Length: 164
Image 1 (cartoon, one colour):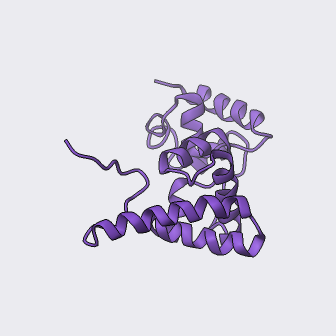
Image 2 (cartoon, helix red, strand yellow):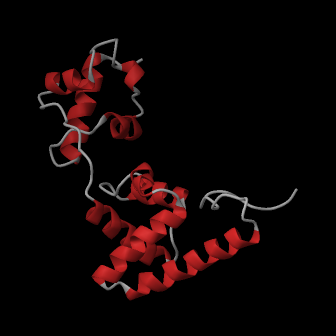
């Protein structure tokens, strides 16, 4: 059980460590171990109310990230890994690199094949030949898998395929 004064002190401390910008709920929980159920409905109705009491303006929603930014981030991660990232690799990279888009954000492009197609359009336009080679290999692998069994859906990047 955390006291109201302790939570406010943690909001201030974590904001100071974050360049005087208060953290969002999920990151605050991750950084402090104080869950929202310890705060909301107990001391405050909304996270923004807790931030106000700690002396900050409430956080605002980020809004939708533009496609160019998403694709640029996907290029950088693909280049870093040397292959198109799996969902768990995107999650891990996002945890280690604040500001990197959430793995769910990339779902707006569709399944893996659709994501690779979108990335292919982007790298052709921007000249990322190293990423082009990676994506071409991934696309041909998906095509080969699809041709082996036309009734199967495209393999999700996190799906394990095998026999038991």
